[in-house]
Length: 369
Image (cartoon, rainbow, N blue to C red; front, side, top):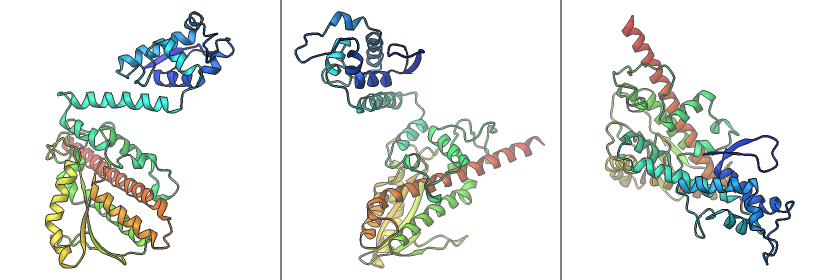
């Protein structure tokens, strides 16, 4: 919620959020009181309550406190904000607040807003699934990495598709109401990730791209990696990767699930990953055991969440780098691997979304010709 202010010596009235203003004044409270001769000493001798309360800044802080309390931010001695204006000056007048005040207030407001949305019975199932998945393990890794190399870089178009997917928005403006397969895109903007005709083309290409990235990461730490070739028209009998390390052998199979697909009825976080992993274990665990290898599925959700077994694979990768002169130090390999895989996944998502948009527009054009 924005607040109009002009009480900090500003030449013009500006609008900032209540959490930003509250935190900024808390961090500079002693400096604000000093020129007004309103310093708060340990003995409280020159703490002029009446004069402090009449300052413009105090009136703005009072507005902030009321607004934040209305947003259910806890106040008082055990809360995140002061109970009233005088408590604010008594707390921060002698010792300025820490930079983490704004972070704490904002995180609390966001969590309250999220919980309200998730607990609302009118919130669509797909929306609940998207919100849970977007808050999952490593789901936002592609948003926080620095694009210092091609592996960590998204084009403007890919980034736009990734943001729209994360926010549950249509992938492009002016899309026809239906997909080329006939499904309603207005009811399910993310339908392309579950579209049957796309599974054999761009959805498979996204999967193969993640497989290649994972294989390259293991090769960088000295592992011997065999990528199972794809033979069209035949069922796969071996997992995607056969990884040989000095101390162990792994078989890894990549799967990417879309938690908001119509077939996914559960709103439990990571239910999509657990269901996919069970299928993979049932299919490949015995085979790996016969060859003296350990099978670990590498499951991701389209919104970016990593399964616990995916994190296990990355721990093996990091441990292997410690015993090998890898190009990337072991101390940073873990975060680099997560970011590289996260960016690669979003590239694949963009490929799926773009192809879906093209085919939907082509089908709509043919319909009206």
